[in-house]
Each structure stands twice: as C-alpha cells, then as structure tokens.
Amino acid sequence: MYDLDLTTLRLFVAVCETRNIARAAEQHHIVASAISKRLAQLEDTVGNLLLERNRRGVVVTGAGEILLAHARAMLANADRVSRDMAAYGKGIKGQVRVLATVSSIAGYLPDDIAAFLQVPAHRDIRIDIEEALSREVVSGLREGLAPIGVCWDAADLEGLQTRPYRGDHLAIIASPSHPIARRKRCAFEDTLDHDHVGLPANTAVHTMLARAAAIIGRTISYRAVVTTFDASLRCVRANLGIAVVPREVAEPMASTYGLVVLPLTDKWAQRSFAICFHDEKRLSPAAKLLVEHLHAAATPRRARPSPA
Image 1: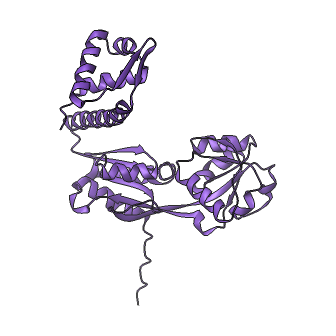
Image 2: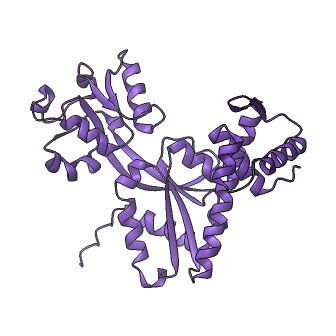
Image 3: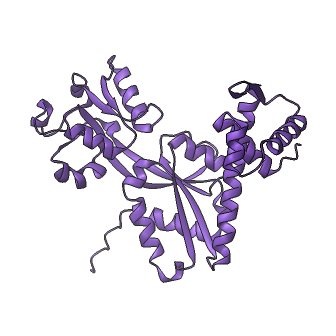
C-alpha cells in the first residue's frame, strides 16, 4: 500500500495540468526545485516514471495518467472532508450529499429538497447536490462519494437499493416557424428528417435517442451539440434545429423563448427516475429522512374513502 501525501499529489496534479514545473511552482508559491524533489520521491514511492522532462516542460506518461485520475479523486474527497468538518463545526449536525442527473435537477428535485429543509425538525440538516451523469451517479455511490443518488431508472443499478422517484416526458422543442411546429404531438421518427440540437454523447438523453433511431434504422442529424438544456432552447430559438428536452423543463421557459413544445408519443419518452443508495440500514438518520421525503413527494396520494 502506497503512503501518498496530499500536498505532493496536489503539486503533481498542478504540474500535469500546466505541463510545466516552473508554472506549477508559481501557482503554489514554492520553488521549482522543491516540486522536483517531491515528484522524484513520488516516482520512487509508486515505482514508475510519471513525467518525462523536455525543453518545453513535461509530458505525462501512461503511469502518470493513471495516478493523475486517482490523485484528482483523492483530493476531491479530501476537500469534501474539509467542508464537512467545517460545516459540523458551525453547528450543522446532519449533512447529506446527493449526486443527481441534470434532468432531475432541472425538474423537481431542488423544490423537493427545499421543502424538506423547510421542515422545522430538519433545520440542522445540510443538503449538498452535485450534478453528474447517470453512470457517474451510480459509480459515485459504489465508490462511496455520496450516500444518495437520483438518476434515470434505466441505468445499471445492480447492487444498489432504489426507491421510485418522479419522472418526466421528453418533448420536441421547435421554433414557431419550423415545419414540425404545426403539429400538436409527434413521434420521434417524424423528427429525423430535420436537423437536431443535441446534448453530448455521454448523456442519458443522447443515448436514448441514438438507440431509438438505430432501432428503426435511422440516424440523427445534429446541427449543434450543447451541454445544457438552456443552451438547447437558445439554439432552437435561433432556428438552428429542433431539440428533445424534458417537457417539464421546457414548458416553464417556452413562452419566454417563444417556442413550441410537442410531447413525443413514443412510450420510451416517458422516463422514470430512481432514488438510489447502497443499503438503507447503513444510511445516516438525515439521509433516511431525505429518502423518505423524496419518495413520498413523488408518490401520488390515495384518495380517502368517502364515509359510509
């Protein structure tokens, strides 16, 4: 087992990112020779060459790339420990970190968490939300980065316990002047003759649409790829194409942007999300309360039977 100190790892990451020991030294207000000494000791510790020096700076080796990924994760965890301890010292007695997908954050999750925090009995609980892709939510839970996750229920949730959460309905967003805007509803297949504005390939929405197109032997023509739903709506408003966005996200902003919202008729367009965790018995009291609250918020209330 390697004995790695965080200061050396922080300097190693800085050198990898700047590709230059001198620049890293300036950033951290330390002499370059001190960094070089620490890096040499680090290479001795792990038994591999991590950086190759040249006239322009340094090049990260294959072994260095592996260590770099682990170093970033270790430093992120250390920062979380620091924040958690600082928060506890300020009197926050319960803290829950939630990894959640952008779709759930853009939908109901912030309001549900806000309602949870407004309960007087929860005044000493702090909730931190971190945005992540569905697969990152799952891997983060498995690696212990957070106790609770909210993601698409079609993700690989093997080994995790889940509770049903809310869902959304994917819809086509179009400029009023676009030909497809004359429809009231449409199937996804009907959109494939038009240019799309899409999200990155690693997102759940992109994966779902690519799979749906492949099943019918078609492809999607992307005229623009952006990273947020808001950017999608801006591109659609500029008539660069149409976009597939959760209706719950688009409708509140459609009037502001002057756009048309057309719910997709495909069954897969109605998505469900799940609250995920490793083991309910191992959740902290605050985390258990949050899971119960989110699940209850998404569960339709049964009508009370009328008196006889």
